Image 1 (cartoon, rainbow, N blue to C red):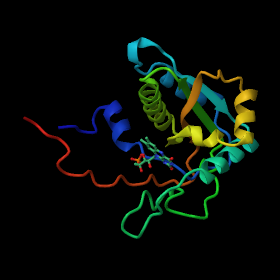
Image 2: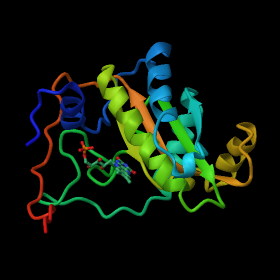
Image 3: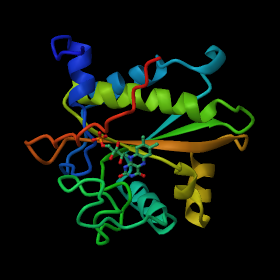
Length: 198
Ligand SMILES: Cc1cc2nc3c(=O)[nH]c(=O)nc-3n(C[C@H](O)[C@H](O)[C@H](O)COP(=O)(O)O)c2cc1C
């Protein structure tokens, strides 16, 4: 039985997705801690193929977040089926135009196109980063299908400006910022029947 006694377990159990951020950039030291956690994630064959591109350029982040929103064909939430009422996602609130929720820091994880395990590696790194963010008091959000954020001429220009190798693609983003709300969002109930023991 997991208890919250252990600091690592406590961190895992209390991390929640944050989409409402303060309008303030994060401290450099906190950013470096989160990045280091990403660098130390497991990677298939120990390849360490994930590239972490940090953008703290508000204008670029906003433009990419809008492109992402325009390319996201989400099924909108209902009263009973929703992602989060406390930290609404673009599926919960159609008035949100920026799929990056105005987060001051957006980290895009790029992986090699020719490597089957690229997205898995990026995902492992993202979770390490989200847990580290939570540990240092930052809020974080995982954004999947990051290639959607670059699917227009502006996005393509940014890839060139960032000097991203053409044999890499954007797998996901990790958004970071200080949580706007003092109250942490509640976790949904865990669904029954997901652990099968034989
Ligand atoms: C693969 C993956 C993709 C996700 N993509 C998005 C996304 O595009 N936008 C978003 O707001 N949240 C995204 N999330 C965050 C989930 O909505 C969130 O983890 C989920 O609602 C559970 O909430 P919790 O993280 O607070 O436990 C994603 C999470 C995962 C694991």
